[in-house]
Length: 303
Image (tube, rainbow, N blue to C red; front, side, top):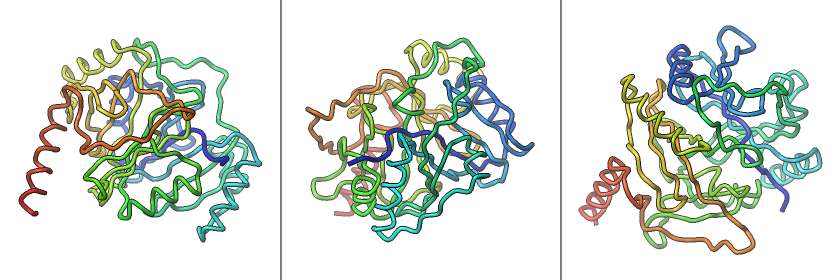
């Protein structure tokens, strides 16, 4: 099935644009790019004009997800599958496509009501990426900007939508047998470009992840975060399913950003879907281990 092939961009509504810009430049090493208006700002991390848009609207949450497809034919095929599935599709206007700096796009909502866009003709910039601090750069290219984790009230319906309509493949699932609590989906060799967590949270998004080209970049970011007093909500560790070595920082909108290196790659010709009893890690991530232990204790008490 032809479908999306990378996570192209994310749009966030924020209440403190200056604080976001400070975190992005001092800790994350992203390049700050002026927005189209005084109330927007762009964050750049590779050859794209930007990968993240910040809107000063006070929402402090995920506003839109942009998924890339290779060409017009694939975009139109995705639109047809959406409409056949009963999803209302809006064709982006020329002005809307220009604002995203893409050739063409469509807009719709996923099963959780998340505003989603699919486009072709990525927003490229021939000027080299200039990180705001010394780093080797980010692992993007055909694998997109990284991954995001969002909440879905009906996990089964969400997995069906993302796989049968948008063309994702399941990497693995986590949770009790027969009652998975999370599904990790890929659309390119990156282990997952989106993970779906059952239920709801204080935000639509749990976190998004940026993958560095060097482990030293992750270590230096952790040091800077500690020096500057940026809250580290989950400290350094290695995930069990995608093998990412990472830590998580809080952002000014009160959700997390994962900053990692060394993520697992998927070869669809031989990949086998796995099942994990929990989202615990191989080592480290102590706060995550505490959350998993508390969840298991609560489940046992409830049973």
